[in-house]
Image 1 (cartoon, helix red, strand yellow):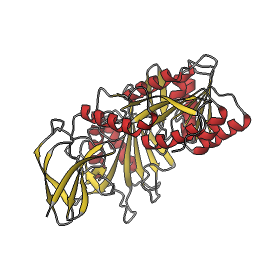
Image 2 (cartoon, rainbow, N blue to C red; image 1 turned 60 degrees about the horizontal axis):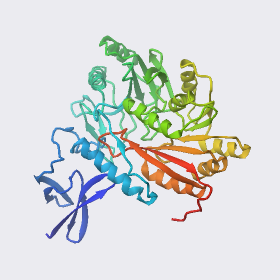
Image 3 (cartoon, rainbow, N blue to C red; image 1 turned 30 degrees about the horizontal axis):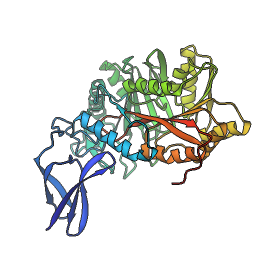
Image 4 (cartoon, rainbow, N blue to C red; image 1 turned 90 degrees about the vertical axis):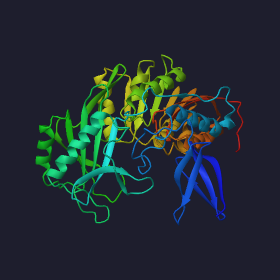
Length: 447
């Protein structure tokens, strides 16, 4: 059939490009320079056998890896994964002509690191409750008995709860019929405090058998500190709904990062890698070069983690976050840690920065930690008008960071430094810390 093979890179991931009868196909989970055997199932080619494996390939990774969409790199050594990410970042940002290559701070532990774990449910053919994760790019559920990114404690809790749900005949939600009760379970785990929050996400407020389920969970003494029922009856792939009720305990947990303590609710944004979080914030603040009389903006501040870390170095911090519950938690976190020089505001980051620029407020440093879609041109233009001497842009999506850098260039900023922290091992995601400084002589750059 005239097969042609070519190893190529798509983002971080090495894949194989196959040309068959004039058409091009891609095959994932192939390592560079491997010899492989590709077969054809009548629809498209697929990887049937590794003839000569790479030295970087591993075979003791997750058994659900090929079907589940949760991980991207369970088939290679972690050191090779970091090398691929480093190459990708340096290629992506080559236009910056940085003095030094972008380095990556890797994790000591590349498995069992997630402090936020969620699973979806279905009913098996034998009428048992089955938990799993979605197959990549689909809503087909792959049954997963033990996720290697979850803490061992969380996997034990999930297994126990599955039995309880089957015992109490709690029907999983069916996306096609929109019937059934349980949509997801969502667990937050405190690595340092060992506290556990269990969130049962249901299809609306009705939860027949709720009291029996809670009693059975507590009888097992699983170390769960609080149980919350979250209501989500929307036709959406978003896990959590807007409303909830506490079924047991206080409805939140605490976690400590370095010298600080944080209250975390189900809806609050909190970095998923607890151990990597301090690395990330220490790096960001070391590059911010904060001074005692500075006023700092922490945009997209979540529950106030980086605001609190920055507070001891400066005169004032203003944390901005649209999520009301996160801001409520942030205010409590400041109080818990006896910090009085932070003002947390419920507002859209773009609207707030525009207002500051119109009022000509004096801002010395801006810290941006936006969601994956990045910031906005309007927000960055407002920062340009405020003229802070340094901007620390923390990004979990390098492509949107690259896009946003162009807007900063238009406002007279240049990239002084960039480094990354591998907050999401075994996945394609990575966290970048980019330092921008004002350069009045920098002319507008057109790309």
